[in-house]
Image 1: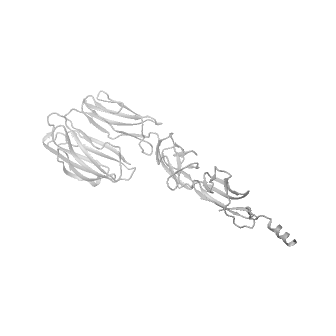
Image 2: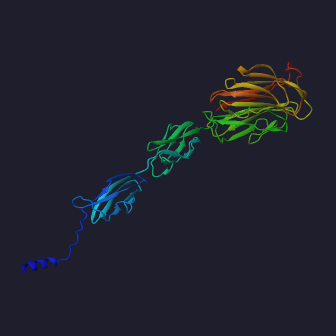
Image 3: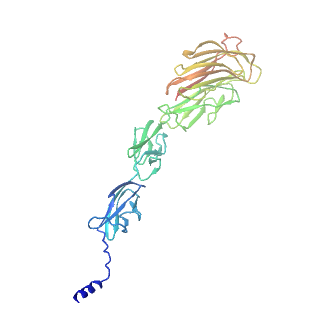
Length: 415
């Protein structure tokens, strides 16, 4: 009976349930992550028992100590939001593991600046702005820029990029950020220091008008934009001049036109001799109206004479062209539209050319008497002149020099 009772007691108990092993630790990997703003990285969490054995099927929740720096999804995907650091925590059954995420800004690959060149008058200012760009040209925010000038006596720059023109000359403004830089070439135009008519002699018929070309430059011979000019005639009964510099022939004779520029500590002026002549005297003109020429280019100069509209006044004449041989090299002499000039003698290497022109029917109206081609050979900064003179007026041959000479003088600078 004792045996049976023991067996009965043994069989009366129900089946036992398996014991669940609790999570002892949580390990997050990688434990440290370095990201750039905008990048993402997947973290993983391992749940382990007290003995360090892996436990499967456990629920893990994720959180960030600073989602403004690095956020984390429910699956452990970390996204870098802003520079700084955050602690990412994985929790399971009251146990936690962490990883440290450090977020750095995207490095500056290049610097863009709002202008690459500036031209300012002394005293003027110009605000420059700069932007950092990533490796694919995307804009980067929150970057620090350093501004510097190569010559603060010409142009200075503030810590915020405000450029101030100080003195005539050139300077380079450089802006830098994180080892990358961009530059701006600044040309500062000084106060007017010189003024010059493109030609020193002008012929105009009575009751006719002709425009003038005047250049104003600073001490470095750079053109001063927007300079204010005042024109006056010393003999308005012979030739008057408008506020814009247009000369009007009034009566036969000679007059001096003066152009004065304001904005200079001392008066700066130049004069132009105007000859007012009747239609019997030809008026010479050339196509060279500019005060500046570009180096290493081809220059074509057309010489035109106007004999009025009456009966033919002239059948032949001699034209002499002189120029600064150090600045211009003659490469071709072409016939005019209505005349055929012949070379009497030439010393092109020294800057002198003499042409004879003739028309069996005599001249009337306007005619191109010569077309000359030059090569601008001088370096930048070289000054020079080109003069066209008619030596014989009303002459039937090339030895009669009794008539007055008519000249047009041009002065120029190579830019």
